[in-house]
Image 1 (cartoon, helix red, strand yellow):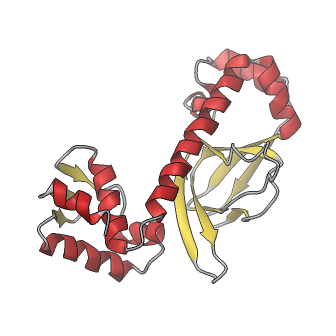
Image 2 (cartoon, one colour):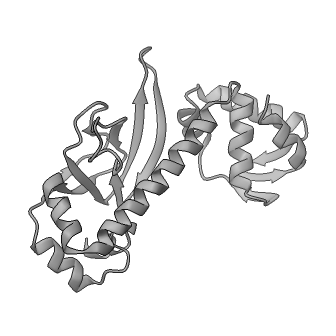
Length: 221
């Protein structure tokens, strides 16, 4: 577990002995969840920092119409909702569901403040995580501002390409359907549309950008 924690941005720059000393000075709990378990509910109060030490979970947002939209996957080691623990409205914006058996270290808010006082590097790392999170959410908001599925998929491919003409998709069509909040066949049809327009060529998860300018134009449709 210690090896996983040392890989986290929150504890960047610390060694194993320093990490041991820090956790000896605070009170924390450990919690475990099975596969497909509800870890936290959307709207639940965020009173502790939950550190995922093992496993994979997903963040899922439910709308008023009952439909769910997957926001992201989190692979250990990771921290749940670091930007909300000290917020005025400190409630989880999404539900967290485990993909696999998941293990957590749970640090209460007052103990987290003590941790910051004991080590300024951890505080600086935490602030950096919040800043990065704000950037991620800004990009996510931009993504969901696209009205058509074609524009969303085009923007996703454009971002994944990152200047390359050949790359491998990180997500399956099922995962993309969750990400876009649509049915899987809709993703398949939109991929076919982009291929028929000779914008991209997609075989299994391997993507080749045929016309980058057309792909950029499709982002605005």
